[in-house]
Image 1 (cartoon, helix red, strand yellow):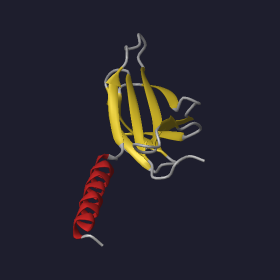
Image 2 (cartoon, helix red, strand yellow):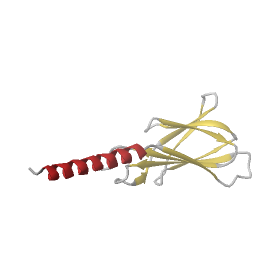
Image 3 (cartoon, rainbow, N blue to C red):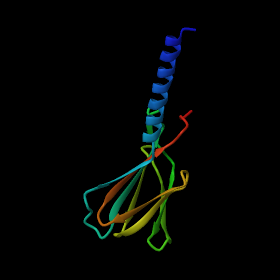
Image 4 (cartoon, rainbow, N blue to C red):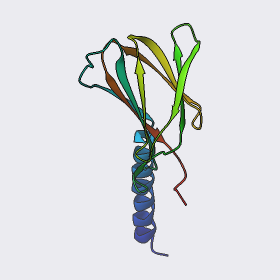
Length: 130
């Protein structure tokens, strides 16, 4: 084979590998917490949105029927709820520090609930949906 052709193929393989490493390193679970309008009662609204991120080529979809548990700052169970078809579970809680636990994903997030909040978990998942 021609040495120039082999060199060109080697460079292409090296570039594709570098692009793949870059895409894989940017693929991770992310958490975003945004404020919602506060309620007039003594409890705040906590919306937990669970999204499955299937990577740059797989897209993002909500995780329905996920069981979300809420624990207080002492680690005691407070309440739980299932996500709806949009991947959202809604809770009404007094202000305080809480731990959210999504049982299907074995994933937890700590949140300080001083006002109503939406917590979005975009979970990096390695397999495409069927």
